[in-house]
Image 1 (cartoon, helix red, strand yellow):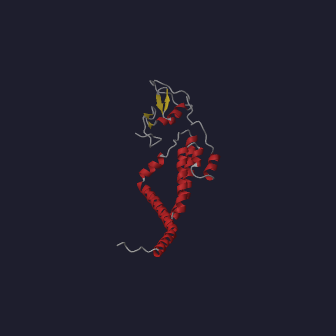
Image 2: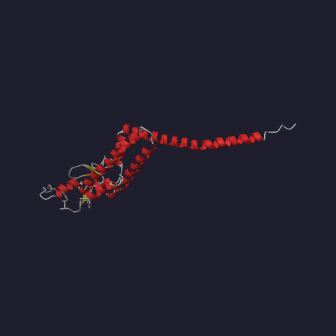
Image 3: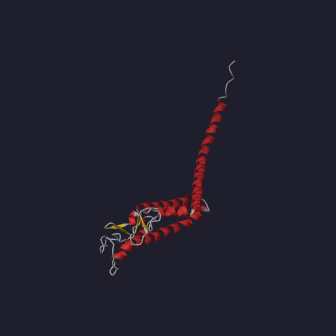
Length: 221
């Protein structure tokens, strides 16, 4: 069974109030009873109905902070999103792994734009602004979730899950990257041969010249 909030994470607990499956990160233990954060907020809100008769434990007013303990500044996130490479906005929010993955993806696109031939250069050029805007909007969505008290994991499970579910998209991306890498290797080989060819011709000419001046003698009787 998978967690309600994190579809790629296995769930081991259920909420005593709504019954949804939860992973360890989403589970709140209150005096031996397990709750999700949403139900705990509803039960701790002013004017909430009392617990049914026979419930062995009661929920205290608010035994622990459920808002995540921090607030992400929208102004600073805007600065890191629009004036820095994609991925820096994730690092600003403490998502180092996700930020590094986004940063590597950005520089890979830049690399393929520089080494690919038309029409792949045009394709990667069109993909670059889409990639940047996706990282920007995703960053502000994560900020909203963090400020709402939701726990956001520092992983790229969502990207991996998307690629697994959309095998056609994954295959096309791998094919484009493979052709780009193959074209880069072929270009390097052509340049190496172009530089070595004059040396090969000069060496062959010197060899023929020396051989002409010193012809082999007659064989011994």
